[in-house]
Every structure is written in C-alpha cells, then in structure tokens.
Length: 162
Image (cartoon, rainbow, N blue to C red; front, side, top):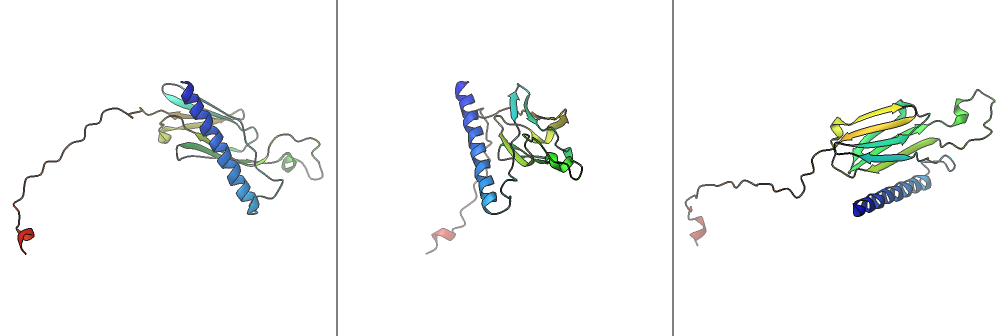
C-alpha cells in the first residue's frame, strides 16, 4: 500500500510540474499578462471500493465558468473566478486580497480505472464534489483468446511456376 501512495504522490507532483511549465510557456508567449496569473484551488481525493471522490474548494466560482473533462488518465478541472475588485461598485478599492482569482486548471491523476460517462459533479457551499464510479480492474486476469480455424485451401501452384 505504501508504494501505491508513493506512486500517487509522484503522479501529483508530476502533474503540478507540468501545469507550472505550461503556465510559464503561456506567460512567455504573452497569453497571460504578468501579475494576472492563475491560482490553484486545493483538492482532496478519496477512494472506496465503488468510486473515486474528488473534492475541490471553489468558493465564489460561477458554475458556468467550470469545465470538467477526463484526459490521459486525469480529471481536468478548468475555470475562472473573478477578482474581488470586479465585484465592487465603481470607485471602490480593495484593501486586502488574499484569495486567488483568475483562471485555474487542475489535473488530478486518477489512481484507478473509472467510468467518466457515469460521473457526477455537484457544486455545493463552494466545494465541487466529483464522484467517478470505479470499473473492475481486470489487469492480470486470464483472458481467453479464441482461435479462428480456417480450412486448408489447396495450393494453387502459382508459387511452383518458374
């Protein structure tokens, strides 16, 4: 079990490194103005015998600004949260702002095989809960491969002509 948790931690770190390199590339390409960077909401992942549960803290995020996909064995959550200043009346100023704002993307490695077609996502009280049903892991299970038997055909003799 320890090696599995180590594998998950390495996958999480690799995912975060990939996200940072992608962000750096977008920053250099001018796609993201300096100072308007992304933020990274905290994520919890739990598994049971029947499902994988991913919970992401997203207070203040409009559900219409969220997209969830599964890509390359990962749950990818993308979205945007407006900065506090955008919600203020004209002329008001923000005195203190610690919460992240702007675009975000989280790629969460899926540690087990899941059925994304039956996934459910609910945003409640600022927490997005994504339930992904597990599919039975059949790796290593014996699989019988049928053998197709074809009748012998007489040699046409084409190969013997010189």
